[in-house]
Length: 189
Ligand code: ITT
Image (tube, rainbow, N blue to C red; front, side, top):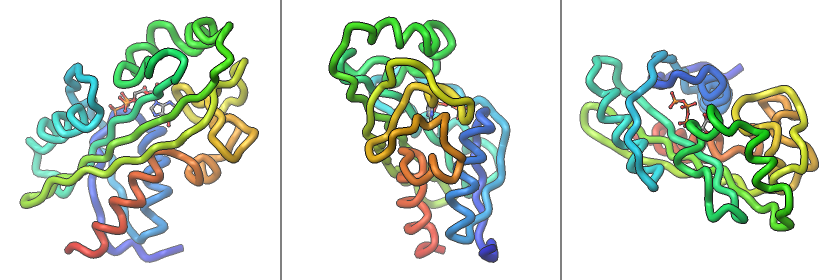
């Protein structure tokens, strides 16, 4: 178990996202503390803009340094839908709705994208991560959250929802963005 020498707050309302992020950062000796807050999101085509806006809102607090993260599922055959609208689409159409939209599609390519935005009293930075993969024909697995049961990352036969948290972190968009952040954070006091 590495000694956790630095810490950072994560403003999110999503406990799954927090648990995944904590697992990645602990391997760098970085302790993650959750601020359970739904940060106001703007509607935009651009995940980085959404993340930076959320960071600006979240920084009106004395909990520094802080990260926020915005993610989405981009499906090739649906021209990138649901993308930045993933949260809303998950609540409304749900996984079954996506499966229906994809029923006659042979192109199953999709990717998850993540943008982590970091802010301290002096610096704002963003880090991006992409996980390429395919949309499953049927939902599989019970772990994780959101669209995990229908996303099969490249290099695996399992959906994210059939993996342990540690295995998901070997492939995930969020873990890729967070590792980039962690490498920078450790070098910059
Ligand atoms: P915040 O409070 O951090 O904003 P959120 O759940 O609203 O939490 P996002 O806006 O970043 O988070 O995520 C948009 C949606 O995209 C999310 O609700 C899921 O449906 C989906 N999603 C994002 N990352 C995912 C992942 O790793 N696995 C499965 N679905 C994911």
